[in-house]
Length: 345
Image (tube, rainbow, N blue to C red; front, side, top):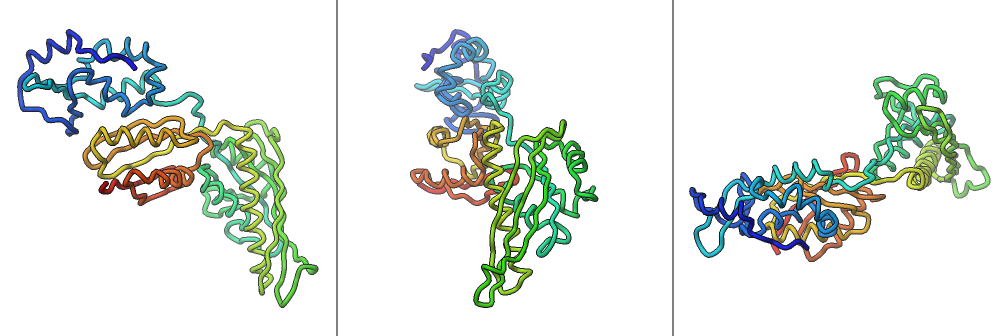
């Protein structure tokens, strides 16, 4: 940990500064803290202790050598000199130095799904299997597009691999899943008036720019229902869910899945308590870094960089931090966003 010192520059500023009285805590224009080591004391709002220690020389040269550049106002009256830290300027400088964002942040791959569905249960406006596959991927934090959805601006016409690759390029996808899904009745499994269907998905994951095959994707699933159409639909949906699990597993192997999620913490606690909460978030397995993007008395906006961790996984992990009185109010997997409210301790 770097030693806190009251630099000559800051000492001179304290001696000559006058104006409205400062009080410890958050203000609209910054955060008031004790003047000695003021800038260093708020660094944990943006960086973990490990990052601060590992970047000590960079921080010293770029920020801590001139702390007055990040001090809006100082107050020498009273037993403890106070300083108003410009949080916005400090955050922007840390961002410019590349310290708030961990290395290797590539994001989860964008996926375009193009499955041609045939036979019983096939959807008219959107594929049953492909829609379930897309939804399951979205729940894991992926940005996925279903090319079978007729609400697309350019709906699929032929379902060919060439068409899917062209659509993948247009959507700036990293992976195109092209193939077919079909459900067939299983007479050998029918019983008690129920009809049984087995759905099969057979597809290839392709790189849209070159058409190179990354890997194959196969999934089969059964379902039963009193009505044949219902059994076929359920089987296709079950196959889509299973395909999503397998596809996600292969994408984890192929891509470095480190991405950014957003948290809005409403009615945040005092900043010292907030620092402890940030450290708890940083300790969650799969969380690579946590940085404050904005801080007011009404809301703390956080940037959470995760690796192989979905929005829902992070929300579930936050729920285990029982010592902190936070209540999750919104979890949006597609938007990679969580909203929570700080309650009474």
